[in-house]
Each structure stands twice: as C-alpha cells, then as structure tokens.
Length: 110
Image 1: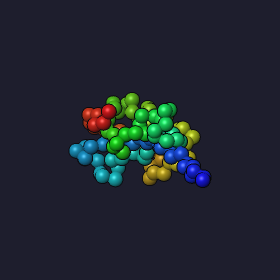
Image 2 (image 1 turned 60 degrees about the vertical axis):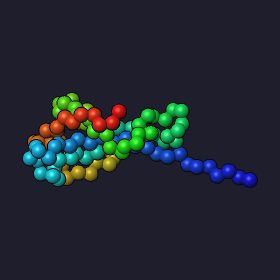
Image 3 (image 1 turned 120 degrees about the horizontal axis):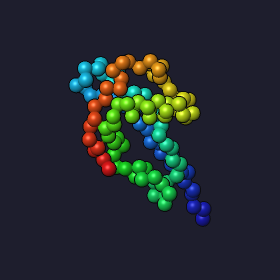
Image 4 (image 1 turned 180 degrees about the vertical axis):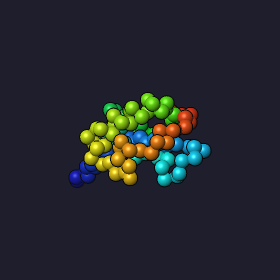
C-alpha cells in the first residue's frame, strides 16, 4: 500500500504600515503596500518551523516609531522579492506626506 506524500506548506510573513482613522487621512491612503519579511516552506509542526507559523491570529499589531519604521520599510521595499511585486498607486519615493503618521498601538499578540 502506498502512503500519499503531502507537499509542504508555504508560509509568508508580511508587514504593512497604517495610520489611525483619527489622523484625518483618507481611508484609501491609510495603509501601505505590504512587504514580505520572510517566507518559510515546510510544515508548521516541523522542529525548525518558525514560531510565527503557529500563531492563531492572522494579524498582529504593534507600534513602532515612525522614523525607525520608515527606514526599515524602505530597506525591505528594496529586497528582490518585494521589488518584484510592488503594486501601488504611489511610487515608493512618492508616498503622501502623511503616510508615516502611524499611531502606536500596543502589542495585541505575543
């Protein structure tokens, strides 16, 4: 009897920036394009699987100072994987001036 072999899953951890509704920024301008932080191919139960592959929540919110996040996001946008999939109404160097006015919510998932 032959045992079927299952292909490994692909997990992708994304990051986006967003501003709070209280900022007065129009709804369609409050969220950035998403950037890929890391990709894992395997099973979430594998010994070497990253912890984030086992999170129950699909969205985790955390706060970050605007300047630090802007620098990090700019670096990630230049990664090969992220440059290949950028689709946005604003080129990366032409975001609206209020784009990085993000709020600082507390961590909602550990």
